[in-house]
Image (cartoon, rainbow, N blue to C red; front, side, top):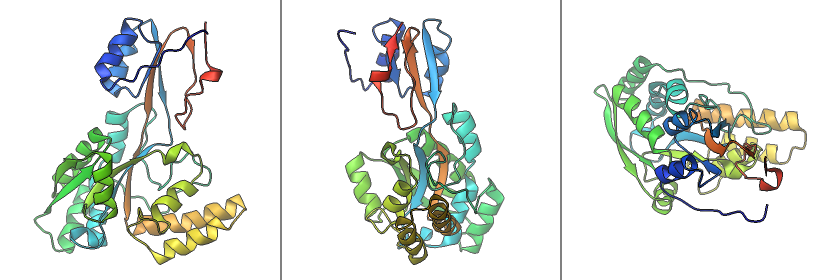
Length: 283
């Protein structure tokens, strides 16, 4: 291999055109629909790879309707996460019921799961004082198609969510300041395969932690000092069960990364999405 040319393209259609005309051997992060179409081409190979990347909903907890746990739980019941995974994201995507990516080391099984139940969502809204539903803004920065699907389900249950999409800087400022009543967060946990990244970054008392729940913080403090894997996972489970019971986060789906490769390129994607070209070769 004498030369490798790397082109950065923002336009998915341009990338698709280059792989179709053999101007490129590798493209990635292609939509599910485009991937399905490209799979029909004999000159390419499609890989739908599982990742550590997830999509969740989270809340501003200090004021407004989402200060009430019943309203947050209504959101959890209102969204058909299985349908979003199977029919929208597709590939290796699955309904997410955990705070961490399932493939991460020490990611515990969930003790609290919210199955799709829009009637239960409307019941909880009425109990919380919103018998006619409520109006809100759902803020996001990535995975717009997932946020749009979630907003559609919320609207059906009476949570009329207006979508607002921001670039990362303003999005993070609005999220960490608590000014976003509900927001769609997409994260790959920096490609690191341990659940500590999920819990400590988002619930360990950092600026990203809007709950600052003492029960969660105590469990994480103990977990961070624990070297036994099983005991550490049990402590993460304590933290996770509290987070899910209080619906500080509503996990949505795991996210697939779609790769389209030239037929003669031997390349194996990894869950961390790091492209290890030193392991690749061409026939």
